[in-house]
Amino acid sequence: MPRDWADLFITDEPDGSAGESQSGEGKERRRGLLRRLRENLSKTRQALGSEIQATLFSKLDEHTWERLEEALIMADVGASTTASVVEALETEATEGGLTSGEALSERLIELLADTARNENDRIDIRAKPTVILVVGVNGTGKTTTIGKLAWHLRNELGVSVLLGAADTFRAAATEQLEGWAQRAGCEIVTGPEGSDPGSVAFEAVTQARSKEIDVVIVDTAGRLHTQDDLMGELAKVRRVIARQLEGAPHETLLTVDATTGQNGLRQAQMFADSAGVSGIVLTKLDGTARGGIALAIARELGLPVKLVGIGEQLEDLRPFDPDDFARALIAER
Ligand SMILES: Nc1nc2c(ncn2[C@@H]2O[C@H](COP(=O)(O)OP(=O)(O)O)[C@@H](O)[C@H]2O)c(=O)[nH]1
Ligand SMILES: [Mg+2]
Image (cartoon, rainbow, N blue to C red; front, side, top):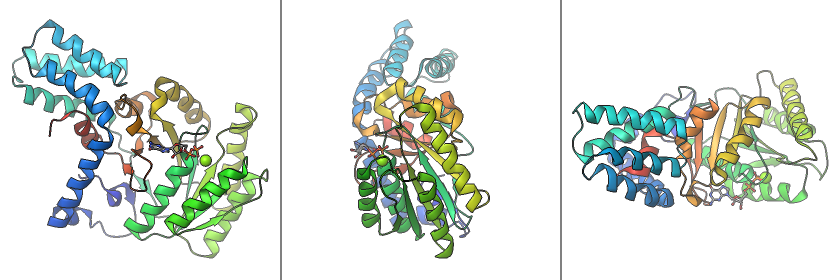
């Protein structure tokens, strides 16, 4: 299924996305989006693509599989994912099913996409309001992601959005979110610097309920005096939200900076273990030659990647589709 904004979100609306993607306009739009994805992933494409060409499209011998493994590990696909994918490809090639470079490369795309698949990869926004909490280490892209997400919810789905500026640690964080609220054309609830993040979150959910707003997105701090303080604060924000609205937060997104590689993965593990994370947003994939991490992270963290950040523009946040992504990294065309 083509992965567009309408596919990412579960809504009350009848599912019209399949029809749209088959129309001429839908197809053209989808081609444009794929082109942009490929362009913004060019750093990884260049590094990985030339190695794929040099291995799969020339004579297959014992070095082929080693070189392919090295290339995938360099692109941060991860040692265990790489080993299982290359072994499967080698077996199929040796058994004679795959002969051309084209067929091998197509199969590699499929195998890589398979490792990144997760059935819980959608965001349910049927609850009124739906509360989305965004957590992650300072600088990983929480606030930017929230701005882009709010913009897409409004413009692609016509959903009303309210932002909660619960990163009260620095005044600049609130100002930054106010800028995004303006760009996205949505409301925002703020509190003074140093105020209780829980009360900002509470107020945001309260206002959303009384104004019948569809989606509340709550920004949080990524740095406090100690890690325990941070985790304690996030737990408190969750409790306060749950007290105001049963079942909330409905979604907790964790931002992970792709340029920090395996280190980012370790940070993510800490949040995943203690902050009730239900999905990953992998950011800054445009800034790294190691974009293969998007394919391994789902497997390593046991959590679905739901969104990817591929640049600083509003439209540079995309629902994550393993097939499109693997193809954008590897395929010639
Ligand atoms: N190139 C690029 N930069 C990004 C992306 N997402 C966020 N950034 C930048 O990363 C920096 C930190 O982002 P911010 O949202 O403030 O992170 P926060 O501290 O987690 O809220 C900002 O300069 C953003 O413009 C992305 O997908 N690509
Ligand atoms: Mg921020």
